[in-house]
Length: 382
Image (cartoon, rainbow, N blue to C red; front, side):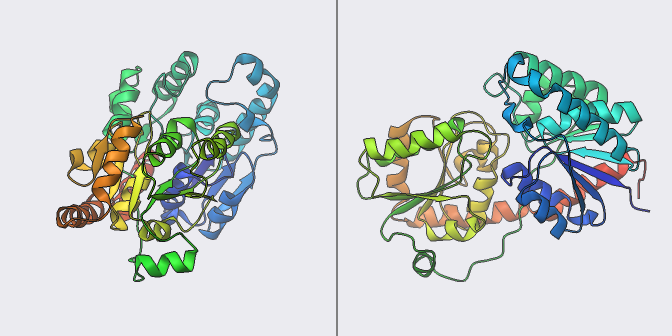
């Protein structure tokens, strides 16, 4: 008999971590999900056969950020208690709780402990001072060490950061994010025409807006390359509207507004990638994985990434893509010169990257690993 699983996530939006969740739940149709807010994720999970509930206490919780002060947290403490009670009530009807985000984990850890249910935390972040305050890191690691049966991370970089903060290494399971992208038969020119994208040299950035994601560095590099245009797909999903406005102002100040195209949040990223000459992954802080990198490798497009976090592992130290220093717009501009136009050496790298992506980062491997962990947590070794 299949274990009864309760998947918990704090957001109703769909970004990188939620895309992973949508893959993870594929073998678990008929199981349950609890979201702290409504949104596109609700519909996407329901389409995969999950029974989705929306918390009655989740309103306002997204105003609490990773670096929020106690004054910011205090008004929603009552709501947090309410969510803990909800998770606990639903958890009693399930064999395993699977928390997919930081907020979901903290509240699920308390709830799962109260009702004696095993908890798996899918950690999609690098726990470090760059992303979390000292108290937040302590709370996360303390709860992980005492309340989880397993902490799933997508890379060695994320695992090492968790352990460096005091996390128990034996709890960690490294499960690289898996992707499954159907081959695209249309040419880049055909896709550009269909998607109404500019002609000529074109780069793409695909990420939610956040300063540490580094979109501003791409704009600075673009100002040094007058002949190149750029599409930026993404939006401010988690309270980064001020940064989005800053980017909009930057294109005016740098006089590149005619070459930068903000596309908003998109569901057709793999097709957009096939239409550009190169994909830029410009994070200035270490990334725990880099879904965009694997998507670009599978799309058979050159990749330029900052050498931070998991990027070097995914790109095999630069063998499957180009690595540049984080925050260095000059290095990024020089890298763009090396991928436009494509040389024979670059074509070989692209082919190698596609083979590596299919062999190392397939969705089937991820589903096998996560399903096995869930069954083990439930005491079902089948």
